[in-house]
Structures are given as structure tokens and as C-alpha cells.
Image (cartoon, rainbow, N blue to C red; front, side, top):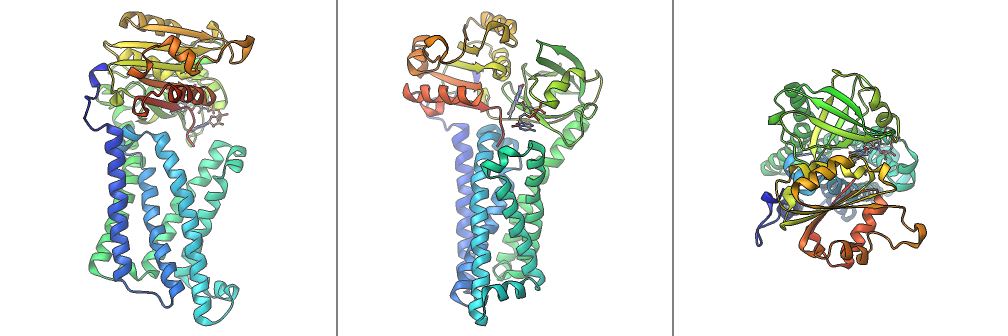
Length: 445
Ligand SMILES: Cc1cc2nc3c(=O)[nH]c(=O)nc-3n(C[C@H](O)[C@H](O)[C@H](O)COP(=O)(O)OP(=O)(O)OC[C@H]3O[C@@H](n4cnc5c(N)ncnc54)[C@H](O)[C@@H]3O)c2cc1C
């Protein structure tokens, strides 16, 4: 871990990836605006503005594809959690852009034909190209509604995720709609080549990251359950073996999305961090029972197939910028921290491990052993926040008392959302530079 420390003055991996994303957006936005200006105006001013919004919507759709393509270069630098947050905001921007485009098209034609918007809407729905566009807009609206926080919280993860994949249907409809409808798409040989290239690039990235790479990796490594070891009454470790595991580009701190076809339906997939540093010998996950999948892992038959997507995530030593590290874990959030400790050859490391009681501290013996081996320091922080009038363990005062040189360290945090938020607030109050703070959330969207 310490060997990866970024030297002062070098561009951080996350900054490089952000710049690459911004460059992609700015360059393509400039080309699209140029195409819009050169393609000429619509049949009236409203239709010209409608066309403008349609082009921005097309660009946003392509950007959405890249954000969910799970491209390793981006994922390792930015992290799936942050990419998912961007995806959410781009998604809502896309929704409003599409609705504005659709409304202006109907209004523009209503003005042109001197009729009502309702009559124009009915007339346009008889035109195949417009109908496809309406289908795409309606699908995006459905996805937007189910992704709004109140509804998202009420839906089972799998139901929400299933509805969310309708995005691909919307993109397919929108693509054909653009081919049939738009003049900008075909306004010149350059415009045609540009749009085709962009769509092929975005779909190619998606197919590569979401389909080809996982299928290839599973065919190559042929993952299987090697052992199932209960760690406590509600926590279990699953050891996974496979072929050529030394070639799997995994790093301690990362997670995979796991499917256990022998245990549950193939469409169920759950993220679990690697709880041991990945190596040629095998992979390990450690899961706390909170629902059907995690509770059922105990019953996994040894030798059964495992389908693994990943490894993913930016919670790794790639982002180290200081020689010293502070690793903070809450409950089962210890899993990636435990793996990182193992990977760390040398270096000055402090671990804060927050649990209700020592009996709840998952993998505690392993953590103690690794910390001792590396010459680090472990503070087991037991209790419940607010209990017995004790000060909050991750307030600025407590953090500073436990780790006086906290501002000089890279800080890695993984735990329940409330604890993570408290730690991040404490670190901000202590003015720990943001570039030194790395958090992993055990929740995707
Ligand atoms: C990056 C990451 C790493 C994680 N690492 C660990 C770990 O090392 N150990 C551990 O015990 N837990 C980990 N989790 C949490 C773990 O994924 C969930 O507890 C598990 O998926 C719950 O599934 P379930 O069927 O047992 O319970 P359910 O009752 O089905 O789900 C409980 C909650 O888990 C979330 N969840 C369920 N399925 C998924 C999914 N496919 N993707 C995202 N969230 C989902 C939902 O918010 C749901 O409300 C991690 C989560 C993430 C996002």
C-alpha cells in the first residue's frame, strides 16, 4: 500500500479521470453545438430550440452509457459509487431535457399548423419517427419516477434495478428516432460519421464493460466455492477459487458483484468487498446476514459455480498520497480494511474499528494480527453513539485525541452511512485535505 504513495506535484489518479471526463464532455458538446449551428434552423423558432434540446439529450444519453459501462480505468480512479451519483444527476438532467424537447416539438408544430397542442400530439403519434421518440421519452419518464427517492426506497432493489434497465430500451428507441427524424444527424458527411462514431463508441464501451469482460473473465477463471466458514452467528466468509487467479487484476479494498447460481436465481447479484487481499490462491468475501442472499450464503455448496463481475472500486492504495494511513471501519465495513491491511507491506498505519461490543467485531483476530505484524496501532471503539453520555467517537476532538497527526495521513473510511457521514464531518472540521479522504459506501444508488 505504502509503495504506491503519490509524490507531491503528480496528478492524482482521480483528478486525471475527472479531467478526462470533462474533456470528453466539453469537446463533444462543442462539436454538437457546432453541428447545430451549421445544420440551419427548424421550421420556426420553437422547433429550432426543440432541436437544440434534442441534440443535448442525445449527448447526455451517450454520456449516461459511459457512466454505467464499468470501464476499469474510470472505475478504479473515480469509483462506482461516485460514478453512480453522476449517473443519477445526468439522468435527471436528461429527463428534463427530453421533456423540454418533446414539449417544444409539440408546441412548435402546433404553432406551425395553427392548431392545439393536444391535436398536434395525436397527429405526431401517427408518425413512426415521432412515435419512437415519444416511446423513448415515456420510458425515461418511468425510470425517472422510479428513481425518485421516495419510490426508490419503497421498491425492492431487484425490482428497481429491473425497471432501471429499461434505459437501454429508451436508448434504442431514441437512436432510431434520431436516425429517422433528425436533420442534424445527417446534415453533412462529417455529422453522419461523428454521430455513428459516438453511438458505436458508447455502445461498444457498454458492451465491453458490462458483457464481454465479465463473460470472458468467468470463462477464463471458472470461479467456484472453495469453502464456507462461519465467522459468527450472522457473519460468514466464502472462499472462492478459480484458474489463473494471479491474472485477475484485483486490489485489496475493491469489491465484486457476485452471483451464486447454485443458491439463488441467476438475476440476483450482490456486491461484497474482498475481505482478504486477492492473490493467486483465491478470493474471499465476508458477509453479514441482512436479507435472503447474505443469510443464505451459509448454505452454499462447496464446489458450486460463482459468477463474478469486477473487481470494482476506487477504495484502494492507488489513491495514496501520504506515507501514513488511518483506516476507519464500522461493523462489517471492516472487510475492505482487513484486505488493505494485508496488502500493506510497511508504513505507519492506525486502525479505528467501531463496533457495539467486542463480540460483534468481525475478523478481529485477523485485524489484530495484521496490525501487530505491520507495527501499526488498533483502537477498538466499542459502544453506541450517545450511550452513557460518551462523546461521539468520530467528532473532531475524539479523532484528534486518537490520531493527533490525522491531517498528515490518508484516511480510508468504510462503515454504515451515519458513521461514515460522522467521520467525514469530523475530518472536515479538522481540515484534513479532501484529496486524502477516501470512503466506500455499502450502498449503490
Ligand atoms: C460496494 C459494496 C460493498 C459491500 N461489501 C459488503 C461486505 O463486504 N460485506 C457485507 O456484509 N455487505 C457488503 N455490502 C452490502 C451488501 O451488498 C448487502 O448487504 C447485500 O447485497 C444485501 O443483500 P441481501 O439479499 O442479503 O439483502 P436484501 O434484503 O435483499 O437487501 C438489503 C439491502 O441491501 C441493498 N442491496 C441488496 N441487493 C443489492 C445489490 N445487488 N446492490 C446493491 N445493494 C443491494 C439494498 O439497499 C437493500 O435494501 C456491500 C455493498 C456495496 C455497495
